[in-house]
Length: 254
Picture 1 (spheres, one colour):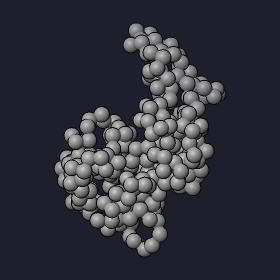
Picture 2 (cartoon, one colour):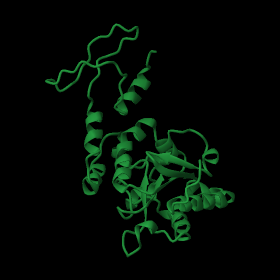
Picture 3 (cartoon, one colour):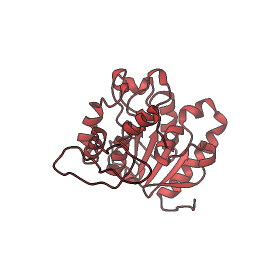
Picture 4 (tube, one colour):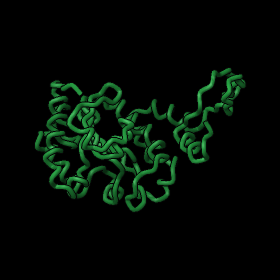
């Protein structure tokens, strides 16, 4: 199979290479492989800066991870952002809400889900006695950590590209590893794509329990979509109730 320049660029952005049996030269910084006699010839495999960056991110604690996000220049979004949007909530929260990409207000304030969509989300969470606040004495079971798939706002709120999502993914992966949530709520198309690797419509994925690295995951609509489609609010409430049942241990078969 021949790869186009665009496909190869996407693979490079994700730090991926075609696999061939390696012969390692541990003395060199780059790792090359010997030619193979199979019909498919492959270019030498190289440990790219993207691969090294992913390994480094996987070892960061919360403060170091926040610093790494703030200083990230891995894609062109760093040139147009006002600031990065790391996440908000208690680091021991049992709930994780994952959104899509920051909008204009998030970019200005540096916090996910603000403005009208954030207010709607907060009301939905409050109905289940959940809070995004890191203050107070609420137990972890009533705390929510909120993060976005992308940490920088795409210009004019356009959809994120595959390359941008690939560059930002290690940050979200590390947030999940550090948080170790009991339940994940994926809100919107791009959160679903990042966590479930699925292009299925939200309507086909909601209403059942999925898994991300063993963690129960419930799919629902993004609050911004609910503000435009009021008839879907009842379905979103059903999704939150399902997530609450799972978080309390009443897991349902998918």
